[in-house]
Image 1 (tube, rainbow, N blue to C red):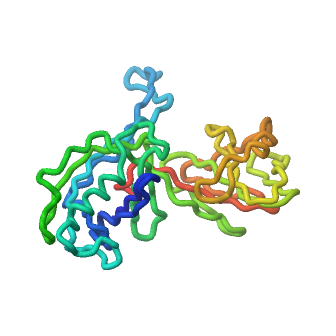
Image 2 (image 1 turned 180 degrees about the vertical axis):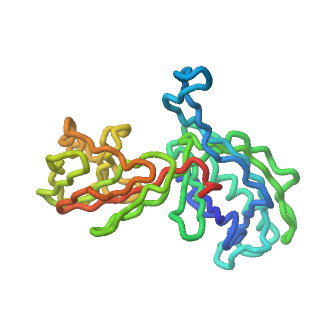
Image 3 (image 1 turned 180 degrees about the horizontal axis):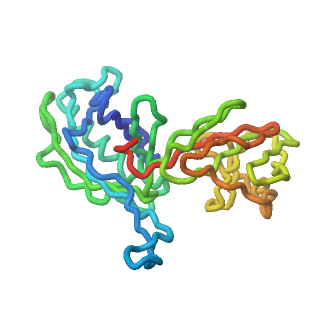
Length: 279
């Protein structure tokens, strides 16, 4: 499995830390150096009707913890890294790597983005921050060709891994192969657009817009509507216009997008995964 890390917004940077291209930015995970990062599920139970056992009623997903052990060096550094090959290159890599993380749990970015790539599967990502980031075992001001080891404890407050957006084109059936029910995203521009999910007989009308918008149908988000772009801002007028309208049911685990009727809009879905190592 390949892993990449994209740093916090104040220091945007991308690092291939394991798998294809690892070390090209100067950091590589040591063997077995990425541990944990599996969802921690707290189950709520009651005594079963039978004489033995418990019956699960529901569950909460808590924060997800892990450990990252790494090496910093310039052996595999890409020629276009912009760091050159001078005597201070390892120190420069180390400082850039540390700046890509935050220990602040209230950082505006919420942390950097750790992404797992499994062959033939949608990429999975989770936003992570450091909870413990000791200094280096020795000074990173080391000669070129040497490696500096480090380790940090990391946490994902989201607690799960989220798949990349998968467009559900007309005629294509999307299957929920993840671990949790999924609420689709609805994309549209213009007026007179609507969608009809399974279980609803009346179409859900979408607000008119001259710019692309996306509706998150998950009731946990309040049916939020944003600009349909990376980091899109909230569209408060459109969001207000949707309040009070019925929300669709999710696509259950193992279920499909079959039965959704889209009139002038499109749909995308993202799997939600508890264990990336089983993906």
